[in-house]
Length: 208
Ligand SMILES: O=C(O)CCC(=O)C(=O)O
Image 1 (spheres, helix red, strand yellow):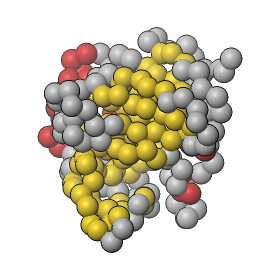
Image 2 (cartoon, rainbow, N blue to C red; image 1 turned 90 degrees about the vertical axis):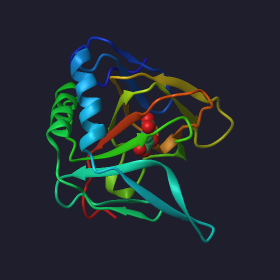
Image 3 (spheres, rainbow, N blue to C red; image 1 turned 135 degrees about the horizontal axis):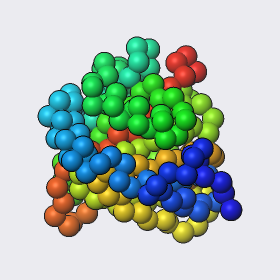
């Protein structure tokens, strides 16, 4: 039985049993009107951008919009994309404070994803870039439409685990999870509205 990631018992939180990693889901992260307001302000105020990746010589748009915010010096890169941090907005500071209080961890940066509809997605990957260090704690907030989040073991034929991440929830990934598991948000044919995902991280500059 794994121990909870949180120092105190958090209302609306549940541990999800996974081998070689820790996963905790918190629902009702903010009072409901606050969550609605945050969703709308993040939609309106974040500097959403279309990023491109190169795959087999072709430059392709990634199927979602993104924005990267953080402390100065927390530049971040993956799949050939290099992101320089924008300055924290008041809404991101408010959410970060809530997460730091819940997890007793510090986060100096956040990758923001906007899934405009069911055709937006993120492919199988792990958050295991060198600058995240060993066994990173990733605090991933969902606002807006519910989307399915899947995890599968990096090696072997282990079963895929599926979770629906609802509006106003927090998924914390920790322990050795990023070494042993990969995750994705698949496309869906269901008509779904926009969803914002914020993955708060602690970047260790200079570890690349
Ligand atoms: O949208 C999500 O819940 C996951 C996002 C994600 O995997 C990432 O940004 O690395």
